[in-house]
Image: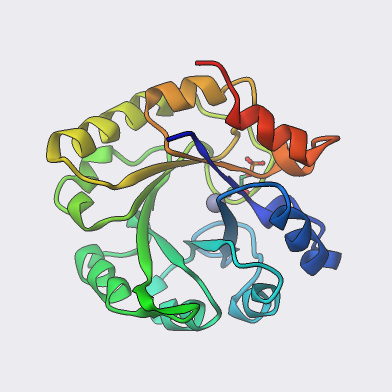
Amino acid sequence: MGIKIAPSILSANFAKLGEEVKRINNLGVDYIHIDVMDGNFVPNITIGPGVISTIRKYTNLFFDVHLMIKSPGDHIESFINAGADIITIHAEAEVHLERLIRKIKSYKNVNDAKKKVQVGVSIVPSTSPGVFEYIIHELDIVLIMTVNPGFGGQEFIYSQLGKISVVKKMIRERGLKTQISVDGGVSLSNAADIIKAGADILVAGSAIFRAKNMKKAVNDFKNLSL
Ligand code: DX5
Ligand code: ZN
């Protein structure tokens, strides 16, 4: 299986978000990554469930909703109702992580009643991958942040490559299907290293939205020689 690509709409033009989502629709990508920030867990504030539900009608692609918010448990239902296919919460934002993971998985996907909502857990660069030890078997996605969350266009933090390998080993040893997604500073120049370390999904904001040709950028990611 090739690498999957999740463009982050944080780098899109918010004045015409619907059009931007339609544009992504034709790129041959696998997910749309939606960064939700509360100005508390991270310094920036972005969008909430209201905006997500308005762009839902422009695509059938999986909405991968990355919640960079405190007390995520208070809000998951609104994001699920807005059309999230995957809810990713931060380990640092929730004490009772195991309980919230189970809760998210108990919801039906509003886009397809036959499916459940998928769950992801993310960690910031300073958090040890050990936090996954007792929860990874419950997760569809582990999202490894390779920048300090809050903004697009930051530089990739290379120390995180080792963390990706550690999590990959954990997944292999347990025979799990959990996918590793890598988010922050991903570019064509570091993507091969990230994939070799064990990534299944690359989240890319500026590398796709600032490319002269978005379709070519996606194809270049997909066709990297490793
Ligand atoms: C950062 C966000 C990322 C961001 C990535 O806090 O979680 O998803 O949009 O943007 P780039 O790819 O530009 O680093
Ligand atoms: Zn993100």
